[in-house]
Length: 382
Image 1 (cartoon, rainbow, N blue to C red):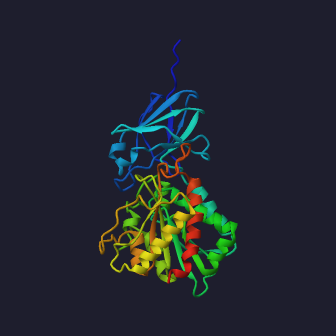
Image 2 (cartoon, rainbow, N blue to C red; image 1 turned 120 degrees about the vertical axis):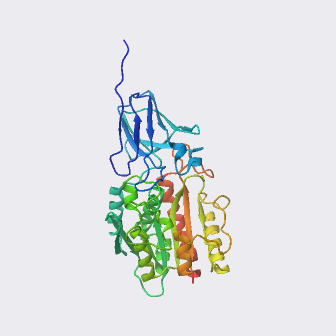
Image 3 (cartoon, rainbow, N blue to C red; image 1 turned 90 degrees about the vertical axis):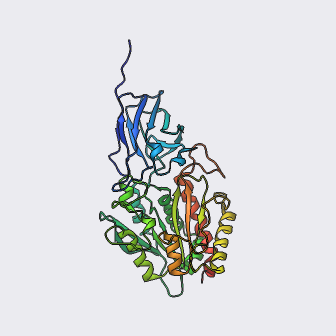
């Protein structure tokens, strides 16, 4: 006798959830679409659960509008991530046929979560901030608000003594780039561990940390923009309290406390490598800044195989920098070392991991190497 399987239940009504159901009546061929950012046409991030799987059977989830996404070329070589418990994430075989992204899951349990990258939940963010504030020497310096009123804490690790260097790290301006807050968790872990290298760093410098610049976008499952539809990393030349209060807050705090080095942490959809972009196109770019960038990159290369200098963005021509980008704007305003740090959504071709690809754990590990790199050049920043 033929057995009719019930349709799967697809759900994205949770923190960072994003999917649209086209047709889930066939449990082995589920048709889906990615929902655009609120008030914006950007889309690429997805995160949903499927309940009612048949263990031992293959289920296909097809994202039928993948070719219309913000970065359609990014689907080539990409593998989605899945989890049965929202704790351990693994790569799921996926292929792009030029129109749809097909995710093929050999089910092991009745429910699975599938996502573009390992999500960083808001609850974990709240726990991270609470944990950070219990570390000796870490304080809540100020708190901004997003468009929808979510808190944006600015933490300082260090005593703010005169003469100390001021090192800024911010993350997740683009809300779908969840690897960025995993990186910031790695920073907090290093501060909690407080080894000799961290002690040396904090003796010479204070760290100013914004762990999530775009909490609204992250909560709503956006790829690129805040709730107002503003790409925050294109708002640094002229931020407003109405459309980009997140950037307005960060810039005001930088003006108050000063900046000697700045790292803006991101994820790149297309390039399967870790790399940095710098300020060579800024109007006042100098050999001093070029030397600091080279020191940073060379040191980070020596400290971790997860960083390289071959693959990345094309260099800006002299005087042609886009000053709406955070790294360019901060470097220009404060005459300082200012970098965008990019991590991949895909696997990392220099050191591949077929099980996880690039992951939250690898993002956290990179943070330790970046802090050690900053320690090595703190006394050269001015």
